[in-house]
Amino acid sequence: MAYGRFLLKRGLQGIGVVWGVVTVVFMLRFITPGSPVDTVAPLDADQETRRRIAEDLGLNEPLYVQYGNYIWDLLHGDMGYSYISSIPASAQVFSKLPATIELAVAASVVAIVISIPLGVVSATRRHQPADYGATTFSLVGISTPNFWLGIMLVLVFAVELNVFPTSGRAYGFADSVAAIYGPAPFFEVATAWLASLFLPAITLGTYFTALITRLTRSGMLDELGKGYVTATRAKGLPESLVKYKHVLRNTLVPVITVLGLQLGTLIGGAVITEAVFAWPGLGTEIIQAINARDWPILQGSLIVIGTAFVVVNIAVDALYAYLDPRVVA
Image (cartoon, rainbow, N blue to C red; front, side):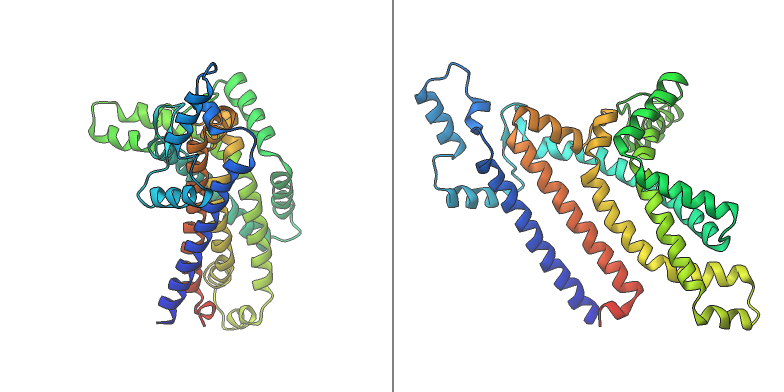
């Protein structure tokens, strides 16, 4: 029951946060210069034409009516209509979401595969060359800007060595899965997909890798100094069992929390990486929407990113409470 109340409380708080995000996104349109009519009306449109367009868009209604209509439409999955792209905004936004999730998950996988073993090695071999190498890597990873790293990787691996494509996304994960049963050659599709994903995932996951490496190292060192470790060693347990079953397990609880929080950050913070690699995700879509003043696309993208961030945080809280019941109490 306590766990159920905890989840209910977090769910209600999440709904409140999403409502706040929607409200702020809605108000942005009214505090920024210009009018949505300018993006729809022809350059030589007279005042009567502009008035009719504003009426069609509902801009002549009081603000609270527009707000109510906007909330009601969102509840029915309607994010508005993009007159620039000539399609519903929800269709455009959700068509870009899989690419962003794919990139964020790939960056997380890269970070987990590298950072946790590196953090364990660094902690168990303290003040040795492996520890110095790991700490130096984490310092460089945290200090390196994503946009600079992305450009350098493109210059070296795409332009000079011609190993990976410079930009774009020829195939997605769904295309690779479909190729297993479809007529397209699976190996060719999967290779092209992984090649286009490699450099963006490394670029986006480097900071994340450095952060988790530091967190794992400090957590391991903290746990190794506790009394239960001395007790398990006194009982004659093998050192590998002490380190990897007891110490690492206790270290991973805060690491999982940060992993979840960073996954939400990766979904919303991939804008620069997507721009560098022309990755067809929400980040690129947001930049294009800002340049074109395409408000329905921009608002829809921000709401989807905010909602994804809230959902990931609630899932992390649920997992953290499951692993450590003291959080619920």
